[in-house]
Image 1 (cartoon, rainbow, N blue to C red):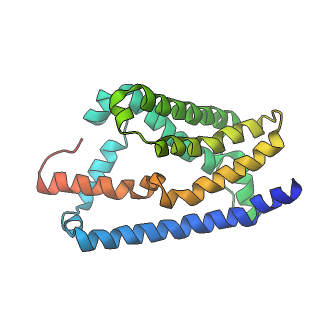
Image 2: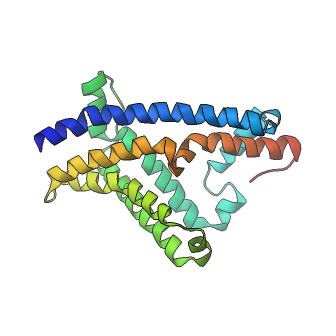
Image 3: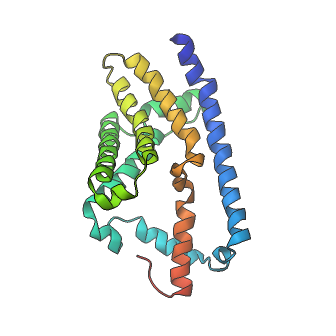
Length: 219
């Protein structure tokens, strides 16, 4: 198990970071070139002021009509995304790795808060899965890949929570935690998780079109 740990925490971790960074740059450059080639209006209509206005409104809970129409979904979505980003970036154990590997002092959140945010991510994934099963309109648009994506997202949090509390089999769970986290990181540019790379641009374009062309609000 020691050999497996060294491999997963060493070469495989570096490979995951390289694939994530390289894949993200490739996808963003490819998207920008494709938009310029097939839909040049994206650049013609772009207005930074309207783009930032739209992004700001959609970044605040209940600031848009759609957010207000679905209050539970809004709360779960915001809590999920905040926790999904904050825990990997600001977990104390991860901050120690930044210090150990790069000699960088990194901010971190208390372990108790990280525990709560981890449970929020796990609970939200169950909520999203249940919504896809129980709501006919959502179920109609759901495919197997949607459930696999949720499973992929929840695994690093579930295994990390298990390993941190040192429940039975926690050593293997710790290795699974690293494996699943590295898998998610490498998969971001090549799956629907890539919306984290595009969201700012797509929202900015919609805001620009509504503001500069239609002279209307998009929220």
